[in-house]
Length: 294
Image (cartoon, rainbow, N blue to C red):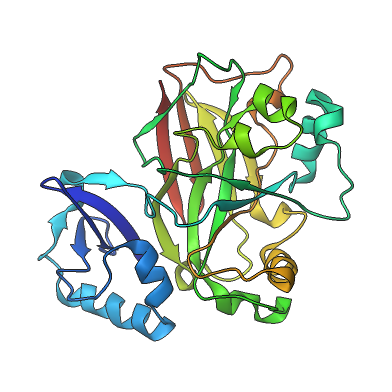
């Protein structure tokens, strides 16, 4: 099942996309108590997901044509910062160290965690702000994002999947000179318009556990990143176990699992983004988002 947020007749709705992708059903239409996708993530059980999926089959033809609504990111305004992993594919670790060794070289024994402030996530088809008044080295990073479905505390790896609600595609847009100048990554990752996400959240049952998925990015049609999520250095159960050992991962938490090789700073010379560039981020079984730099 795919959960979406959309605008129709000037009003924002949350709901579910039909299985064929042709229409959307708001939670209001389905007589569900959720006002937002984040509320649904926090409130739905696996039984609820199955029941709603069946309900959508029953109301086929009674929804709003998806092509006529304005798309939003599935969780436009996350209630918490996104938790991100840095340097979580070995090939990306190597290209990052080549770009700026003192900023990116790390001991691979432990993950690199940082947070990303998201005032408003960018929808599929929306704009990535270039912030050209303060930076020149604008970069893209396609990432698998995991959405936590219930509060997780002291979770063992073997039980980690019980806490995963679903997945989405996230572009961890980065201002490289700000990221490296400050010696930590929060500011350089958190400028307005730096979190394209979507086009929906797809539930775990549709994709599976420990998924091995093709993950790619393109800039103006040129393939830049081309990898697979089974190459993660630290996988999803590891991350959930480690983080939940010291802090509660609240329902609705978004964890972005890191990016593979092929980002702009990894080329010689680097291929940074500029206004007018179109960035496509795609993950097998999950979906694709396309965004233009302005």
